Length: 116
Image 1 (spheres, rainbow, N blue to C red):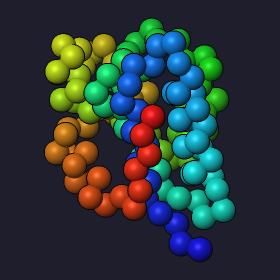
Image 2 (image 1 turned 180 degrees about the horizontal axis):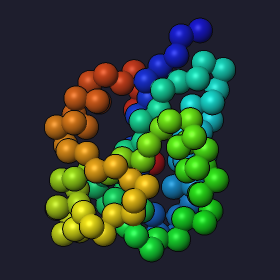
Image 3 (image 1 turned 45 degrees about the vertical axis):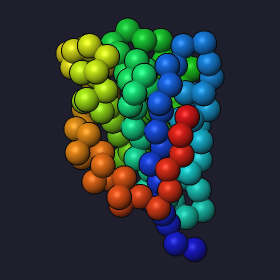
Image 4 (image 1 turned 90 degrees about the vertical axis):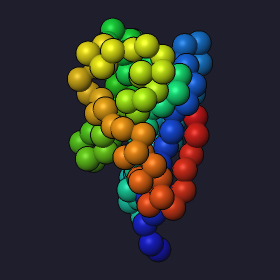
């Protein structure tokens, strides 16, 4: 079987929901499955709140660390930060900040997208 490029997008506020933990768990499953798909993790819209310094990520750290070991980084869309009035210096160091133009180009390369 062929591997696919899959973008997992986190679009909603992470507060009061387990969608983020489940999304990261699903991302890990996709990345380490039989075909070892290439996964791109993107936090955009109100999903960027997950990337703020000081956010409790205890429930999802094991997934984050494993995804990082597999070479899949955590990415935050710069324009979403700007639209919400969040300074880039408020973003935790585990996250890469990427432009909307970069995101658009990456989206064109993906075989699938999954939204959480």
